[in-house]
Image (cartoon, rainbow, N blue to C red; front, side, top):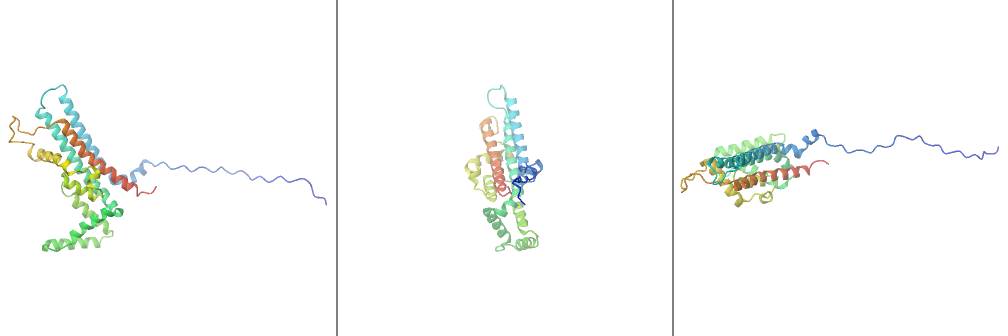
Length: 258
């Protein structure tokens, strides 16, 4: 039987649905709020925003009161500047405490220099040479608390954070200590002892002595303050807080899954 010379046309496969390109999911607001870097710094940034609002408000009030005036600043006008510096220093203090509370437990997990400082702290708490009987007992109690904790490193870090934040951070030395605890060289985040000393000296004189200078030969018995210097000092203090928050956020963000 002769074969048909007719060629069969190739069978066409039914066209399936075109493959859809995968779109990268845009992070929702809720996703952003659950990111480690944002969660760890949220409270510190909230405090810092409040401090900036307060200092800006005081400066704006000073400018309104001073508008059109000439001559020396009045006592009332200088009091607004004094309050501005006090609020800036308090904002720095509070923001850094919240920053350490929120971020140190996480930084201690992967930052070697942070963990070294944590180990130094634990060693001091456990050491009992030259300690009194009550201090030795406190060391043993600390050890017992740590070894019976489900997550010992978090328990040590909690005690470390409490130790760091238990007193005021409003001095160059305490700021340096806080920066080192977070894993930074103080000067890399704007902490310079010589630059900060006159700022905190002025803040302390305002807080503890009402800025009174009884040896002044002037009619006023308060240390004179001016807008340029107080604004510069306030920005310096809040700038340090901003730099530390930003750097901690950057470190934590680098550890988040992409």
